[in-house]
Image (tube, rainbow, N blue to C red; front, side, top):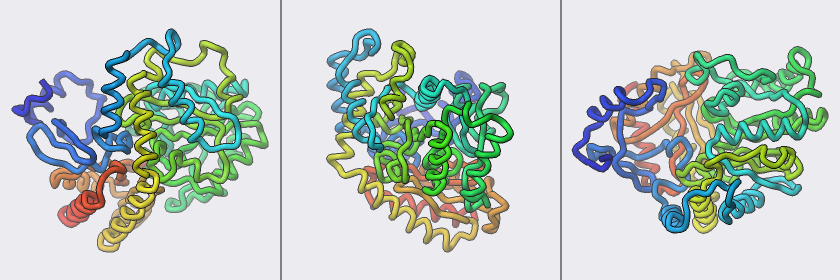
Length: 430
């Protein structure tokens, strides 16, 4: 049925509203018919350049040949046993390769799961089992998932947390450093110590969890000196440091894990999204002694580490090695930042261009005043770009950030075409 080209977006949208829960949002009123690399076509035959990448899931692009071939081969062997019942080699190999890719001069082990939120929940479980402590400190603007526990960690209310409380206890939020908005590294670290004074003693805190680059929060990069200061506090009090790399991982920032660019290695890393090129797979990788803290049977899941998704993940890792996609991420990031700064020079509303590797964003303000976030203009630009054939996503605490997560396999020609559409969209709505 979904391949019937006689469908229209409007007709499918009517069916969607009648059948799908209202709480499931949709950024663009479009329905896909087919896709290839960094392009997609809707059911009405219109072509779009994909700068969203399924929210950072398609670093290797739509229908990467190697990934599809690996999945098809796996489908002829077996699709499910539940790893905890009858194990399979691809799960083990994915863990071996993640252990090799993760930073840190210590023995490592991994656990495979299905979703990013599931990875975060299990990282917290592991941290609590290892430290025998309940408390967790996250940061303002952070996003960690949509389950009850991960919503408790998430530092952004709308739209994720509205109406869903209460959330689990012993979770606290310190300030995330943000020079653009007046929060220094010193203030952020001091806010952690204020939590120790006012909310929970450090000896009862199991872990800090931080995104190397905030995703939904607005693509703000964690400064190296902040991470160093946080690790110093962690070491002083026996607290674990968790890097939430659900969105930043799998090469998006120019290294396989963004925390490879940190001055210190985290104890645990969560990963998902682009790990398996569009197939649902997530994981936790880190210190072997920490990962092994839960008792046998304490970790897992019926679909966790699907053999089909594991086959896809191995092909994704191969593609990064064979196609030099980490270098491509760095080059793409430089191209995007340069082009967006050129646009910003002509558009006063663009108050900042930032990113790490190919994880790049622009932030919009009324007349360039950083105290007046312009969510309305952001929404107009995203809509106008879609009308012109470019898929974008917004984010940020105030909804005034446009983020770019284009597949790393996109050509420079396609990037320039998309960036020109973005510039034209600003001109059209300005």
